[in-house]
Image (cartoon, rainbow, N blue to C red; front, side, top):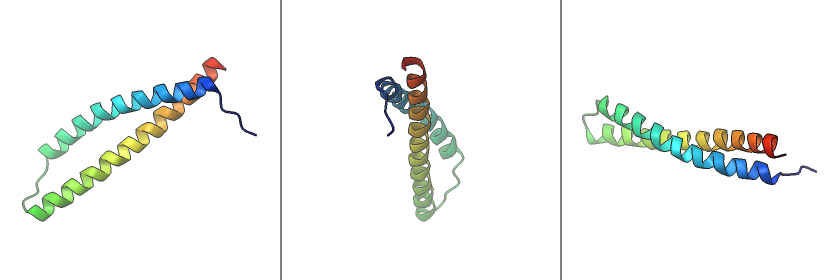
Length: 81
């Protein structure tokens, strides 16, 4: 049976907080850059652009949480036992 360490869970929580901070910084920069280069001219093109931007935000958030939470768990378990 697999055992989950308390230190690993604490590390995962810290990693998730770091992921949220990283998400805020990265998404802000990327959104500004993409909006500056947006060449949408019709309302339909703008709606498509915003839809793709929303998918990108969700994807980055999911990857951030998985990666930083996983690394946090691994480091917590490694250091804390």
